Amino acid sequence: MPSDIRLAFAHPSERAAATAPRGPLDRISLRDHIVEVEIGAFQTERGSTQRVRFNVVVEVTPLTGPIDDDVDRILSYDRVTEAIRHELAEERLNLLETLAERVAERILLEPQAVRAFVRIEKLDRGPGALGVEIVRDRAQVHPHLASDDRPHPRLVYLANAAIASAHLAGWIDQLQAGAQPVIFCVGAPDCPAPQTGHKMTQRRIDLLAIEQNAWVLAARDPRCVVVETRTELDWAMKNGRISVWAPSKIVLDAVDGPSAHPRDAVALAAWFAGTFAADEMLVIGADLPAAAPVPLRGVAVEEAAL
Image (tube, rainbow, N blue to C red):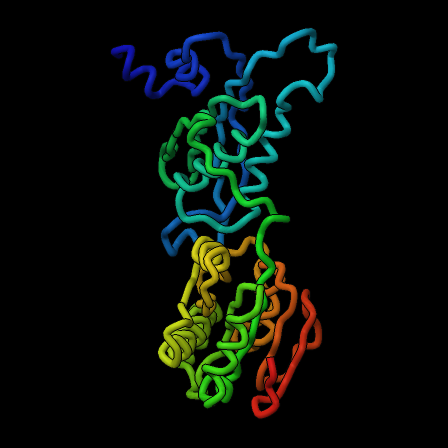
């Protein structure tokens, strides 16, 4: 086998050695780290786990001076496995490419790390291993927002009567004048959704019914933009845009998803408010849930004063 083909399938440690930049670098490696995880873009991959194998090599700047057998002076192996655990727990992902990118980026936030080779393989999708491998260096890293730097939005749940209210534009004016980013949540329309008698398909239909109503709200005022991903929501909050939450993707991709049923839309919105560390959830025209991870305030449509 030609050396370049052999190298393409070699362990990341060999690839790291073959492509090493000028100057000495040390390497740490994680080999054949296997976890059970739900991942994949196909519908057949939802609702069940599969084995995924990680091989990671991290090139690090050599230490100056003696190590003194001090674990705090090195990049610990635990930081590599923690990066994997963190990204797997953050949200359900469709693509190994996305997971590899995020794992490499998190590893390269460590001050000693220079380059990261990440190979991830699915072991249960066929007779062989199906996977991806990437290499990233520190210059390519775009650090995630630290949790303390994330904006704390004001979340407002609008019942159908509130969506239809003549006061909607005035409420949006008042909310825009505030210092906090705003996210609207809604429930399903008043018309009944189709019933399938099947738990998984019914959940999707009920979530899509909420998204239909989100578009109804967007049609009432052009300042309201329907968003479905965390990336879109983060961007909107940082840029002062008003978002309307379309829940399907975030709910279905959540590793530790909501216990609230989509038909209990206020409780579902409260769960969402907790995931985004909202300072408050204002509920206009609907009953408050029995418990919520954020402070709640409820007002009737005719009494709403923001």
